[in-house]
Image 1 (cartoon, rainbow, N blue to C red):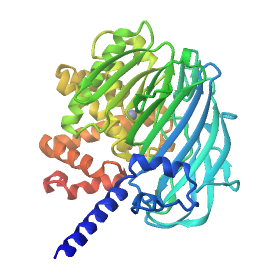
Image 2: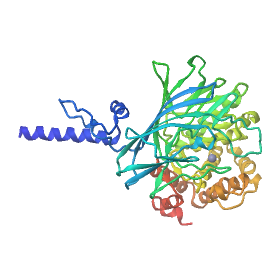
Image 3: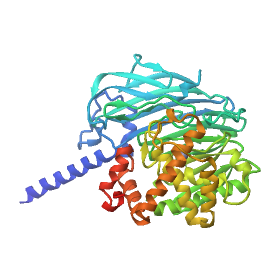
Image 4: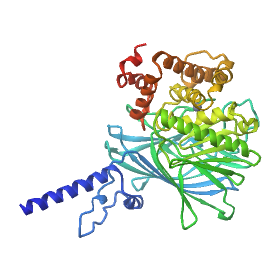
Length: 483
Ligand SMILES: [Zn+2]
């Protein structure tokens, strides 16, 4: 009897150890995998078996570890990047496609080395923003691959003198800011056997992202004059002077640095919201923070919980807002035009970008081919904000934000068929908002928000398409789509 019990206990301990292992690699063991070439046979301790020293197990999401040295004045960045990429495609893979978006700027991206499973490889192919890596083996389903990439960035000057250019140019530096967006190589999603990396366009976003975990260690070449940093991650200051920023289940990691930033923070539950703005824009910086605070609370109630511990609102030296995970930019123009009331671009774009934390970050989509899936919902979320916080401004919002442009066109078009920035936003954003308003009117508030909440709950962390969106009629009361 007693022997049997001990045997059972051993089995239970073993199962527990295994299940921990497959959930996520415990922190203590990560450094082992990062420093030991996977091809080496690790020496096992003699006393007890260590399940963590078996080959790298499947992880839920890719993990990006970026060791960054920034020379702020030279506009130069050196990066040692390690990607732990789990093959979650369900099929074996014999190649990888990695986006290297900084390579769209001539001379900006300089690759030093690529290592796969601890071995340097040279047979990769670089074509514009695309790095193709053939594998000399098959990566089995659920197997995790270690990729190490060393590179440097020479940041381009990103000041926009021509206001007619509708595409905001973010990546690079201005006289008072460095903006790192889509600045590191990342493995693009593989959907139904196809690597998804679309071509950039004059407007709209072209990238598609899997959710991933990030750990960014940041050092400055001259720590004495280090700028203030806004980023997607929660900072942890280290004893050696570096800062580690962490975020889990994010689509992308953005970072902005400036010696001129002023900051203002507030707390919503356990989420820290911080507004970063330049001198002479304090009241607009505070207003952006307040709108974000209000929007975060409303969307958390209406859609589902916000999933990160921080959100950075960053004034940007370019002419639009732009969403990233736990981070968004607002154009300097909105700050300069801010009139002290909530009836302006600063407020509704702040709300729009906050909504992207659900419609982009939590639930992702192909931004190039089906941009309406996030943009229509983000735009319509502005209406949901106003009806809750400033109900007297709802009709103003429809008139000034939407109807002024006399929107027309099909909602579900790719960015490439937009026929210009204004016709594109009219169709995708504004006709999209009208589509959602019509849907809501038809089925009623109760069914509409039940649908939205179900959609958020079941699609969290995924990349969904239009068919998935409409398939939610299956998960919601039948009455919703009987229209
Ligand atoms: Zn948007």
